[in-house]
Length: 220
Image (cartoon, rainbow, N blue to C red; front, side, top):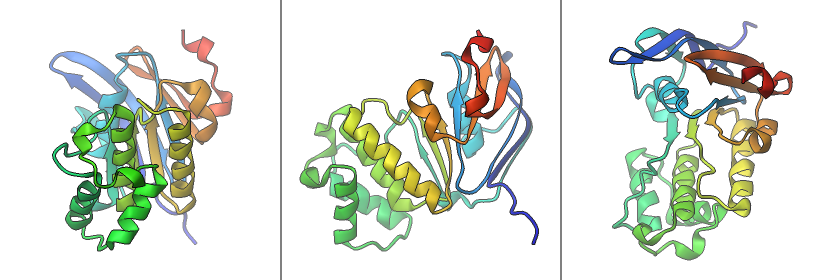
């Protein structure tokens, strides 16, 4: 039996904004059931790289190959995609209809329960704290059950209990075979969750490999 193709492959990918180099020479793969952390100093281009991986930006150089249809990918960034004038329940009902998931209301309520928002199902999302909006955005990702998940600092605004919910849900997603790319600004907290680490520094990929072999001091 031949090996399965990676869900995501980057070959010598680079990106410019105008004449300014953001990064160059990024090559990596992401397999089913694998988590890749993307890290690096502020301004290294992590969010830009994530958008290139997800197909939200075209790379200036190199090739990005995805073995997953767009409808089976989900992106959770700094913008939560939460509709402030709608309730938490109505937000998920909208995404349920948009993606043709066909979930009944009970299943959607159960999703809200999984992220600790069941008691706020009928509250307007515009009244939510940043952390609650992040959890509602996570529920949107879980509703889609994507094969490829892109997360840009998903723990922003989350307390420790909410971070535990996030980590638990991502563990379950990888167990069903999803591939996850996750930007982290806290390697001490998140590195143990990942199979691979991609570190951007000074406009290039300065490390790509197992997280256990990474030495942050060498990147200084």
